[in-house]
Structure formats: C-alpha cells, structure tokens
Length: 314
Ligand code: BMA
Image (cartoon, rainbow, N blue to C red; front, side, top):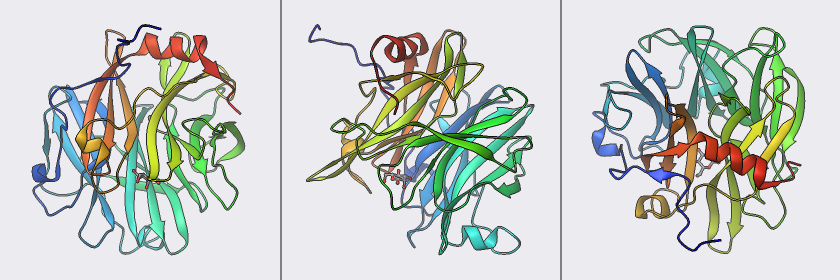
C-alpha cells in the first residue's frame, strides 16, 4: 500500500459550501443536507438549529451544485396544528430527497416527547410541500428511499434504535409508501471497527451497473466523545436485501477544521449522493453539525471498494 493514497472523497476546495451566514433568517447551524438535481440546477434541503435548540429545514438553489443561494424562508418548520403537530413538536431534522415516479419524496426526522419518527412528504417543484404520512414508529431515523419500485414494492433503508445496541441498518418495503413491513436488518456495526457503536443510512441509494450504491455513517466512541465517519455499501439490484459488499474502510472522516470543531465535534454526516453523467457523484455532508461541505467520488471506485475489500455485513 503506497503511502500517498489519494483520498476517496475529493473535498471541494471551497468548503464549507454553506454556513449560517448564508441564511437570511436567524439560525445557529446549517448541516445534514439533502440535494437533488432539479430544473437544470441543484436544490438543497438542509437542517438548521434555531437558538432554542430545535431544528427546521431550509432550502437553497444552485446552478453548479457548489454555490447555493438560500431562500428567504425555511421549507419545513414543525407543524403546529393538524395530524403532524404531535410528532414534530420538538423539531424536524436531517432531510433526504429521492425522485420517485416523477415527484420528489422527502423524508425527515420528527422529534417529540414520544421519541423520533420519520415523516414522508412530497413536492413536485420545491415550492409547496405536502406531508403524506408518518412512516415509522418511535424510535427510528435516517429513512432513505430507493428511486424506483423493486418487485412492485417501494423500498427503503432505515435505522430503528432501541435500548438494544448496536443499532443497525434495516430494509423494509411497502405497496403504497404509507404502510411498511417485511423489515430485516442488513448491515450491523462491527466490533472494534470504525463503526462499532452504530451505523445508519446516509444517502438514498444510487443505481449502478453492479448494484445499488449508498453512503452510510458509522460511529466510534472514544474517551473524547463519538466520531462520525462515512462508509459505503452495495446491494443487489433485483433484491436489495442481498448485500453484495460493505467496504471495510471508511471513505471520509472528520479532518478539516470545520469537521473537527463545531456544534458537535468530529462529525461528518451525509444525506446525499448526486450522480453526474461521467460516473462521478457529488456527495454532501454536514461538518461538526455546523456547516455543509461537498466533495466528489468516483462511483466505480466505491463499487470496487465494496466488492474487493469488503467486511461482513452482519
Ligand atoms: C445523530 C443525528 C444527526 C447528527 C449526529 C451528530 O444522532 O442527531 O443529526 O448530525 O447525531 O451529532
């Protein structure tokens, strides 16, 4: 192994690409951003902490996927009336976006005194958003939807969490996006490994010739607190519950000053991988729960890592 190994995620030299100073309303952080291609450019949904410690989801637009302009108002704020008010009482966090059958489906974590659950919403144009349903029980986070039905069913990865550690990545499916079942664990943390404390889905899966590729986060607990890193995994195209490979090594860890120090130290947390035409993809991550960062990956290289240098999924 040569010492000068190129990093797998090439950080954008202009990182961080978004900070709280870019937001035209008062926020303490901007992080954990979902991004999709839309209307000839890129649209981002990102989480911000308010000064009361609770979170809202903002929206920003870009031509090139790096320079984003934040809109005047947040895209999702906690519902204060109607059927979603009870689950969103303590805030909305960590959006993901998947284009499914012509509409953008958005999932986000909703916190309340009853724990954390995931809400599914839809938007055609990123102007209006319509909540569809609460699609998990408590406690569950990090729902990422596959972009197409597989075997006639909608499919998602998610991460339920309970008293029982360590917390794993599960898959479930649905006939209608509202009722979910057939749940099973697919990827577990590995003892004495960079992800030994917990893992969770990061980006919605992207279709490649070799399988469904996604980026996930893994957490290691140290005497100095937890370290959030990113890993990658590949699933069978026809049956994504079959994990083809989970790369043994992480692909990104906190290294830049704004990833090492911030609202929560030592965090890189991914909610989006956006494929480009040349087999690269842009990935986006929150740095230290404080800023949004971007970088590029060679998707073929991620696929190879999963196939050639795997570790056991469970
Ligand atoms: C997780 C979530 C993420 C956050 C991460 C690091 O549990 O709360 O939103 O980025 O912790 O603090």
